[in-house]
Image (cartoon, rainbow, N blue to C red; front, side):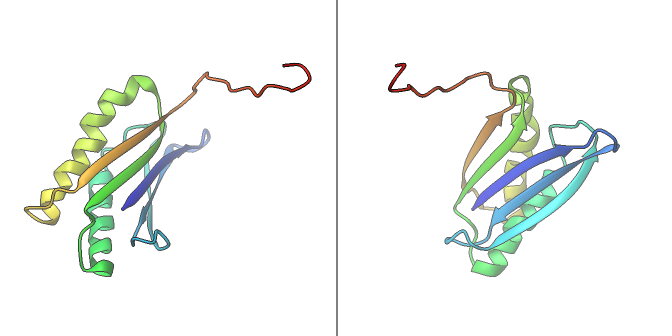
Length: 129
């Protein structure tokens, strides 16, 4: 199962929008999606536990088995929030596994994409080296 999470912040509203999408099959061509609203500017989402449980339960209903591997692609986290992310979102997901099934313990990979990265890539021009 592949899960993607991103947050959209609108300056004039008092809420931020969290989008979650999860693959529902091995071919990665069917998806579960959910949007939740959180207080404006909130980057770490403690409310994801019920969404993870719902996505994994939906996967089980469609496939008659639980995903053995879960890959989460998380966008929009600053480097200073990485440790806190582990104690909120990742712990929240891990705590969800036994609620789905007492022996459920899939392999988990959590990929973070940092915000405001200053690295730049250039190509060499053949004429100017």
